Length: 304
Image (cartoon, rainbow, N blue to C red; front, side, top):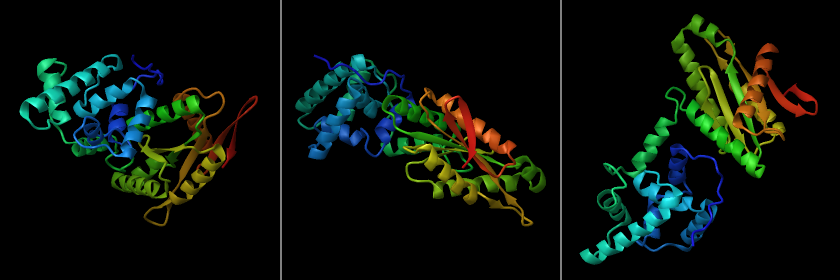
């Protein structure tokens, strides 16, 4: 009897699936190979697989196949396909008198027997991880890009709604950046962007997610961080990001800060709160931090 799939009902993207098999504690190809019998499982791996199966439900079998093929199979068919692939592996191994690894058996079964895959291409896991990383990074600053920002803020807010896990958002805008470009040239503007990207990566905590949000805007997602701690971090970032210009001038930043509150249901709402605080910071004279605080009767902004 199949286990009920009681995982969240939101639609997973292909980026979600890639992260699910390429993370440090994820369902790697090496782990799937051990599960299929290509090598013995350690006790730690057995426990990890048990926890993954419990948390993912029937999607666990989709994950197994995705780790091998990089193709998504719906949960309602993935368990049967996985069983078929295992049987095919053992039949091939018996016929050939040697262990046929799960990757070979899966691609043969899905490509040549059931025709569930089109033209299969073998790509190394390390290479896939490198390509995924490059596709999610901004070329100039090295920070995560706009696309990755929205994937992650959506994930963090869904986790807040489901489990109550705190998350805050910091939006940063370089003050008078057009003037900098017009006065000193776009090469100097690019230098400033790259320098601020390096500073963000250096100052940020391991759990923080630093992104290039727009042309001269940055975003930092702060998981498990309340509004007070987020305000403290934002003030430190404001000081660290002050960047010297030729002639003794300094480029400053304005920052808006927001956290999920009782009424926050979507990532769009959190982004709007932080963006409104950033707008108020710009109107307040720039080079400052404003924190959006939800209170009964409305929202107020306070200097961080």
